[in-house]
Image (cartoon, rainbow over the protein chains, first blue to last red):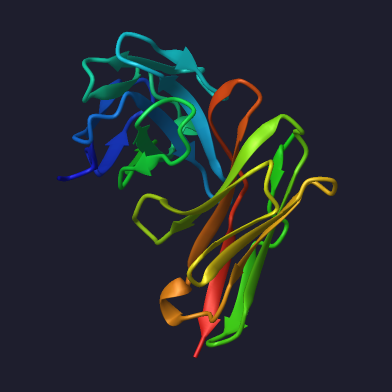
Length: 113
Length: 112
C-alpha cells in the first residue's frame, strides 16, 4: 500500500515549456487535490476533484489544467511554464469530500528558469 | 487576505517541556481545523483535528484547543521530544468550499 505517489520528484523547465505532474493513490479515495507550496508560505489549493469525472478550481488555478484520468489518478499540467510557477507541488487524496483527513504525497519540486 | 494565520515562523522549546503552537483565523464559516506536521522533503502528515462545535481534542501527547469567540486555536505538545522538530501547519475547512486553507507554518525546534 504505497498511499499517494507523485512523479517526478524533481523537474527543471525552461520558460514556455510544458509538462504534466502525475499523481496516483491506491487507497480507493474519491477526492483528490493539487496544492503548491512556495517558500515561507502555506500550501495553496490549485485544483481539486471531489469525485471521478469532476474537477474544480481552487485558490490559484491560473496557468494550470488538470485531468482526473480515473479514480486512482489525477494529473496537473502546465501548458506554458513561467518562473512564477517555481514551487513544490503536493497531491493529496481523501475518502470523500467533506471527510476530514487528507493524505499527501511526497511532492514534486519544480524549477522554471 | 490570509484567512488562517500562524504568526510565529519559528519556536524553540527544550526537550521535555510543553510546546504551544498558535493559529488564528478570520473566516467564521470554517467547520473543522486540522494540524499537519511536515518534515523536509516529505509531504505533510495529519496530526490532529477539531470540529468547530468542540473546544478541545486530545490524542496522546497532542491536544488542540479551540476558542471560537476569539477565532483562535492552539496545539499543545507535552512532553516535547526531538522527533517533534518539524514544520507545523494549521489548516481549516468549511463554508461549503472543498479543500484545506493553510497557514504559513511554524518551524518547531526541540532543543536537547
